[in-house]
Length: 116
Image (cartoon, rainbow, N blue to C red; front, side):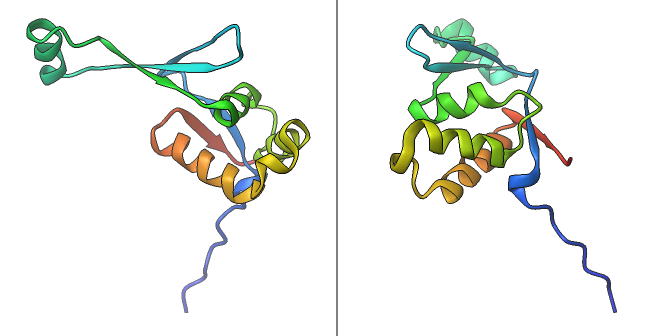
């Protein structure tokens, strides 16, 4: 019989911002992530079709708050608790929302996650 390994609880993990991307925080607290468009097709599009070298991803209010809390020290649960303090019931459903957001950031490689 094969031994099953438990997958870690997302709330216990510590996210880190990836060094692959540059992010800026505006005066209003809104976060913009800059993604460099690399590769042959992007190079051609930039030269001949005047496409931008960087794509800007503007995070909404919850996303900007979450991004600013990702410091490599706080766990996802810590960030969720801070989000609940900041937004109250507007953040509900809190845990499904933050877990989906973290998974999305992880899929786009904007963050890396480590076990504690």
